[in-house]
Image (tube, rainbow over all chains, first blue to last red; front, side, top):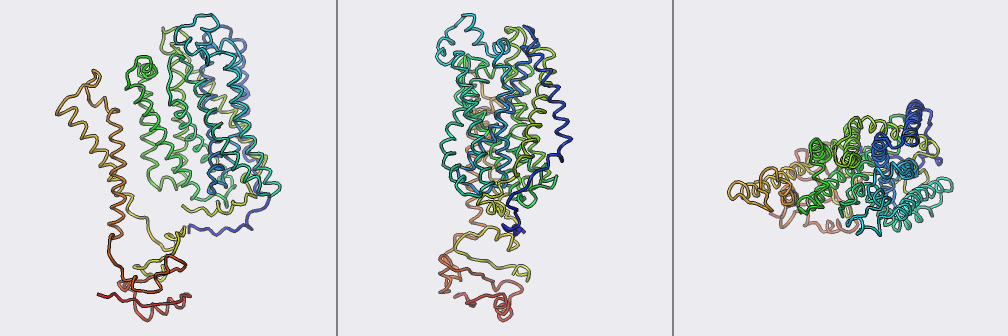
Length: 420
Length: 157
């Protein structure tokens, strides 16, 4: 039966609290790995001197942090979209999105070492190095009003405060409703979300430009922000699906989330798989096929030697495989299949970010002598494991503080009885 | 009705009711398969149309690059468009064929009270073709289930 007949009386007014102790083993392991990793990483950053390891590790760190930034930003996107479109289906899972969005301040905190320390920063962003030694070429001179160190930091501060602030406010209102049962936070969140969406869009677009596109200041793409956003919304939906499943397997959300929610979330994941491919292809089509010398640079580098296979892998792994797999309705309604798809999506999104960041590393650090730096893969593994552990630790801990669904949202019942 | 084993019956309501299809015990429509085949046909048509004309029959050079299987991405936009077009047409015409549309008249239109189906009334219709149908017993069953205004509609032909 589609209608499992839940009534409002079945939902306690205080909602469900997650006992964090049920996840204590994962949290403990994550804390240990993350702690060791952060100590090692900080040691490399602080005492690395002018070594190649320190410079290479900056790229690894950017890759790992930006990966989690996209996921957290995607969480914020889903909350914003949910409020702005006044939708009812996802209220049962909205608190999870809110928790995910509130990982944003931590991702900015983790980004600090590579932005504040001079050597890592200049290893990543050549234009900063060129500015500091005063070798300004024509392309850099043309972009001078935008690419200055002062303005760069102002922008980063803006993104950090705007995005974290929005995430914080939306969860705050939602929690306020948990306590008072007042309907006003619902209206407040709806009204402000419409205004927050442009702020979010501008922040995500320009942080993608500043942190990833400017790894090579001579290249540009007008589709860059949308491309990053597409992967961001996709991977965060995968995280939401996995979180819901993890909580359900521990006995939470049982009455609140049904197969119908999985179906809806699966449809959104499917939609963003297609959207990512659409944007990725359009970018390739505009920049590679236009055959303008300075525009094709990005793709030439990524079609050289081994990177060519990574590019091809993205075509199949990031689009064709999940597309074909998620096309069937059954795949979206079966917990095991949808979770497998979500894990796969997270993996290929990681490869996507890796493919964006890493091809720049070898040519940048060795001044064009080497395509890749030998042994640097090991540093990448350290970075991604460290940041993953830190994020898992913080994310799971945030789960336990409040009810796991907005228990007194006026439309919770509508969401629980979702049928699509 | 579903539990009584009827097969050829339908319900009419002035607004869509979510979950009605599973309450009626309907299985998933086969339309999605038709749409998939239609879409795949579109992809293939577009690919062959471009590949045969630009590679096989009349080798074309665009910006000094010969069109070949490695320039496949250049064919994608047309492949995408035709996939959507063919899939959409299959969805439209497929659903019309599966619903046996268009038809000019339906026996139910004879009923005076049936005109209220788009206003404020809910109807349940059991066709005489159903193997379980019998004039008296079905009427009794409907009455037992709480039906009002039970009416026997006979086709004019």
